[in-house]
Length: 231
Image 1 (cartoon, rainbow, N blue to C red):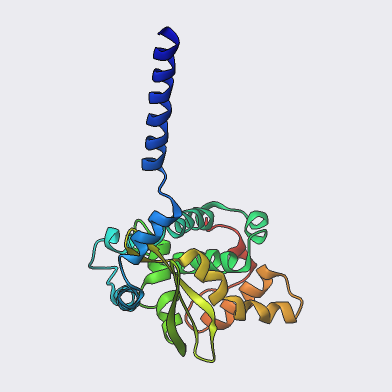
Image 2 (spheres, rainbow, N blue to C red):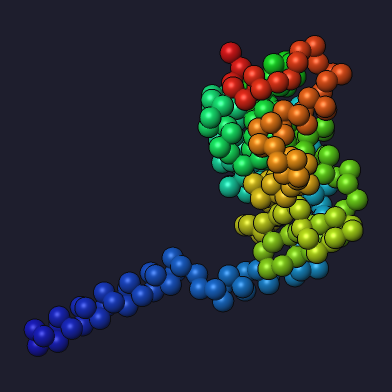
């Protein structure tokens, strides 16, 4: 009888753990059911709407939390990490980063020196990336192809090569979120090749390109000084 009770107890424990595990870890088939609850035809419409919502978002008038919910968690973490690097990282650490991060950091430092970020006390890199003259609006000025959905990814390429995506969105919590983290390196890959062809170091390429871009807009020179943080 004692053994039977012990066996019954262990059986109940095992059943509890089994059902608790099932509740805590949805199976792939359950994820698929949730995804299929919203048909791709509707998700495509929502993807277009999210894209245009980000384009028209007014960072000066609308709360920042309203735009943050439209970015993936990975993107938000990356923005925070890169802004911290722009404010504090020395040249050796900056130059060890990928090209798109060096370009982002140096651009931030130039615009901070020019006081373009005056009055913005938080989320300054987010303003640079998604503001009216930021990366997102510049990407939109390109001739883009149609959006495409593959499972939980929304993608968009150039019109001349629509199957090679440069813009990414992720389907999370039944909504589309902009994947800035994975979009940045692809959008800037073409610019990066300028330095690769000339066998330049990435840091030198960044300074060269930004000097060409801003030379008539600023009252100071753009040189390798900006590979160090502003003091």
